[in-house]
Image 1: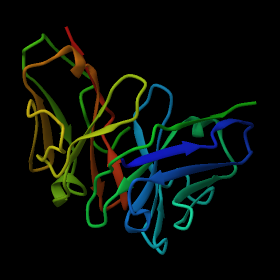
Image 2: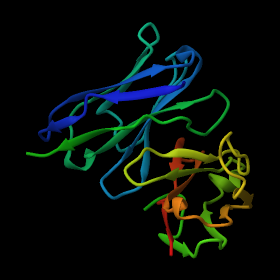
Image 3: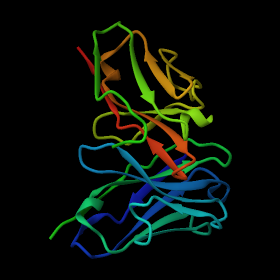
Image 4: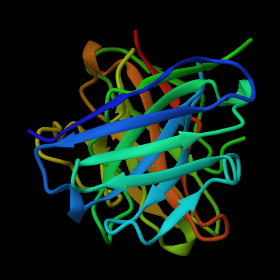
Length: 119
Length: 111
């Protein structure tokens, strides 16, 4: 069974840092592109970052560029999101989502991990 | 303000048909990029419902269908059931933003 499990969320003060993880299982992790998508409380979905299957191509949404860093470790079948200089508006559930090369849809999604930025 | 525009809410009685629109522009849907739809049940992660404009993943009932024309797309749900009550999001790719983009979401209420 294909599964994505996020972890690492929590409460952090404005300006602080947090590292999210996404553990993948049930598929050949190194063959798939991965993404982070977030959802602020009561709001819609926002794509924030992409990493290619090899890790050689990385993209960010303008809202997180320069503050967040996506990475992957194929040996550990894991995806990461290092979040620095956190702001209140970064408060959201963060989902990792798989993407097949050559396609533009996300499937499946993890269950999400909640990040709260507050003093 | 989402790049793709959806109605905030739609509703229908059990057994009825409803449609949800998704309007984009010449830099996303109109540029030829496919539209995909996700269903998000309360307190759960989004689930792929329609991919490539009109294709259903295995396990998605044929009551759900999608279409695309010009700069817009639509999701149709026939034979509404109580379990269809959820938020629905459209998604595409925007070449001007170099980003994957979502609609603001539509809440479906089954009356």
